Image (tube, rainbow, N blue to C red; front, side):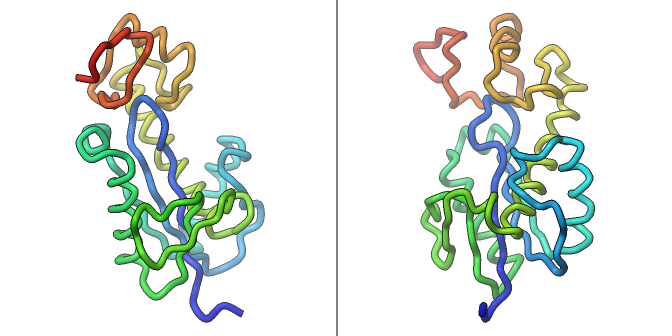
Length: 186
């Protein structure tokens, strides 16, 4: 039996062309039915589970905007997020979805933990819903990109918008976009 509470950690937004990287840490107080990897749930179901997770957990969410990702890189952002979650949710066993701790000690990893461990599933849902809501809001400011639909990921529609409008202020300039035929990143 576990001596400490388990804090599950997951992220959303590591690979998109636009928007934030969001990392969540969750300690569940009560069992919540229906938790699984956020990518396996419909948007409607994620949005139903989100308030249940908030009400039945200790959680901390960390977000990095595109400019911070461009300046520091994804790995540094994940390092900062993991350390911040450990500072805000203390005295736990920490389990991060994936296979890297990004240099942070005292964290275990597990590939596909978001599909196997309830706390990591809950973190996955908090991170994804938080990021998706942000992208829906950005769609109001930059409707020409279709952020409400693709959430900043590399879809055909997103590439087509980039060809016409170039990057918005929420695009990651350090991410190469082939359709813009760049020779340099900046």
